[in-house]
Amino acid sequence: MTFRYFNLCLTLLLLIQGSPAFGQMEKPRVLVSTDIGGTDPDDFQSLIHLFMYADKVAIEGLIASPFGEGRTAAIHQIIDLYEQDYPLLSAQAEGFPEPESLRSLTKQGAISSAPFAGYANASEGSEWIIHWARKQIDRPLWVLVWGGLEDLAQALHDAPDIEEKIRVYWIGGPNKKWSVNSYAYIAQNHPELWMVEANASYRGWFMDNESPDHLKGDAYYSRYIQGKGAMGEAFKDFYGGRIKMGDTPSLAYLLHGDPDDPEGESWGGSFVPIDRSARVIFDGNSSPADTVSSYATLEWRFKGPEISIAPDSACFHMEIWDQVWPGYYLGDGLYSIRYSPKRAETGSYETISELPALHGLKGAYTSTNPWPGRASEEDFQLGSHWYSDRSDPDLFIEDQQGARTIAQFREEYLLDWAKRWDWLSD
Image (cartoon, rainbow, N blue to C red):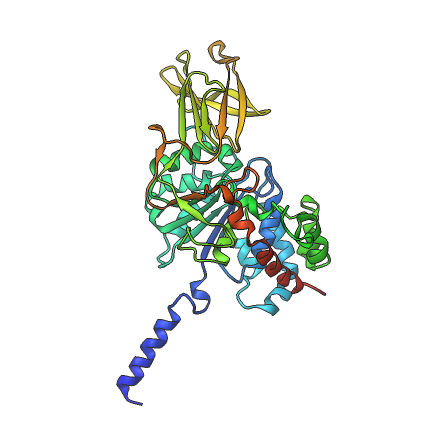
């Protein structure tokens, strides 16, 4: 073999090793922000699913960012279960991370909603996002957000340079109303962020009316999970074992399909680019005649007395659907509150405050499908890499926009997961 031929072979080998199809070096880099242990226990199920496919991705962070009482202890609870099943998993496939490495990657994020500005103080979680986003690696960091956007918004505020280094898949919908201020900050200040905003498509993961009986949420556990390892034993503690896992499509998007092409088909859905995010500003009260899009950002502004508290301080509340949302003083006698409806509905509200001018204000709104609805001058203007749910009528399941783009693969991804549960058989 000539020296020149040897160099050619070596060059080809290096090119192959650097290609997406070769080895672990090209796994998607993943950081998960989860509200596990907070308002919804489905993230326990999603975290089990993540760990069972942990050989397929490079996990670089697990951030606990709950609304409610959840903390990193909830993540460690699932890591402890994974540790018991790790020998069986690692015997079946290479690349499963050591349990201790997952513990070292687990960080505490924000534990309360951001104020009106959309950001507040750095957290261990937001700094972890910045740390990994700034790594000199030629692949983007996938930030999978299973709850609120507080840590992501804080990271983007503190380190705007990371915008071009991350890709975000966010399970919005109800999470949007919980972190609407952080969402507004990101949409206003980082419209060029690469973002999949899944407000409704993700529901196709568990809306199973058209599924075969053995794949329905309440049957899948007894047929495929029960008796399979420590994670299988614990799975019944969450929703009684019924499949929910509403955040899992963000991971599934990376497992099957081309993540660089949100408009293509994948286990995590198919999306379309949107150049605006619906927003409506009300100067004073609104009424049922005020029609907005589902998932829009609703912003009420009220005039009141000038008071001597710091701007962006919560000083009144609004009750909507038996839930209470904080309103903020913005200075110069201006008060405001944001909200995002998670479905088509007619909702009513009433304000609560010690300030007479802001107490007992009543009104309503009507939200409709599809999102993002009719264009408005008040909409957030987005860049060319923001994607959201498809609005084709035939892709709705009931009133959930785009849900069929995920549900069509339900048998495929659940049976694939069933094979991995078999790895944990005694």
